Image 1 (tube, rainbow, N blue to C red):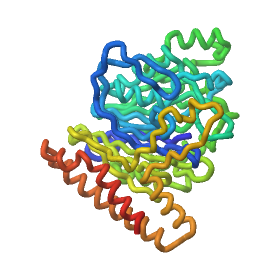
Image 2: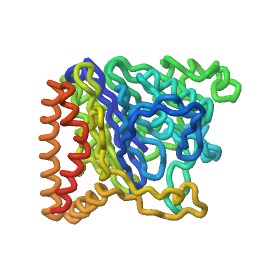
Image 3: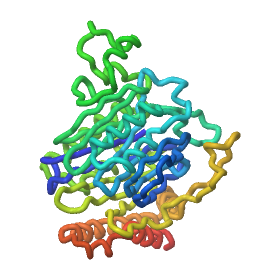
Image 4: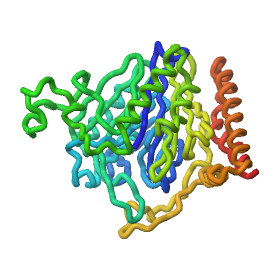
Length: 416
């Protein structure tokens, strides 16, 4: 599950486009944050995704991504071209056993789009071409002994000028450009009759498959493909409450990073989720036409108790090792039969677990650490705002490793 939010001018400060996401995953899963540099690839190269191999492109962008540690793909991320993508699993009437066949996961499509796209619209084209060529599918979790589940996918995509919502149902898809206002998605289709792009012969194919009858009214993607029986985790209710939060925080047309943090930390709406499925990672991208884009990632569960740390694309970027999970090589559980459980915890999530345990026990030490982290976050917000307001090439020296630096400071709190 996932909750994704997009806010655009004129509702934002400084004409920024702001994308936020909470990744709701199995509580036992670890989400890591990694940075990959831009690369020039050889002709005929391939790239191994979670389950299948696909053709590589000549040049890939630098990316910062937040991803379940067991898979290749990303729940969310950004690239050095100013594009951010957040995906959400989507449940439709055409879900079925074939969704478990190994193809591209929605997370793979997210990472491939970030590595290849220079604009938000480019990302839509990248994803839909790959969807047509390779299809989507494969188990969406690795928990040993759990019931495997597959899903279709939706994507909220942004650059400094606009946003796009792309929704799929098997190999059917529609996409809609968002020029202003706000939009939010969870795990059900939302695009009705007003889409700007679609899969080839969409209406004709739906008629042929018996999904759409022309006498029933205008072609409405959400109405045709939504499955009310698969309202995973109260999706409709969460999306409604998310929309209400967006309305509340955009009323003054001064929406910014802090307001998006408030939404992602909202527990009453269950947008900040706990339980067997919980918020295992969060990200906010502030993409400005005036200053460099800044991306804020937790790399830890439960944003209420987590610290959003900044990342700005610069020469010589590094994300450090504290948010990278152990690499098991051939001992990858998605390839082993029977599967073997391995510990994928990275150092930061190990430290954060101690904090969550202290908070669960209502220990004073836990509340003090949480308070100190929130003060650190506020100071970091103010420092980054100042740096961005007068950004030069020399500023890159200060911020190239800022994410790694803040992770190190955070770790020190967990050692108290």
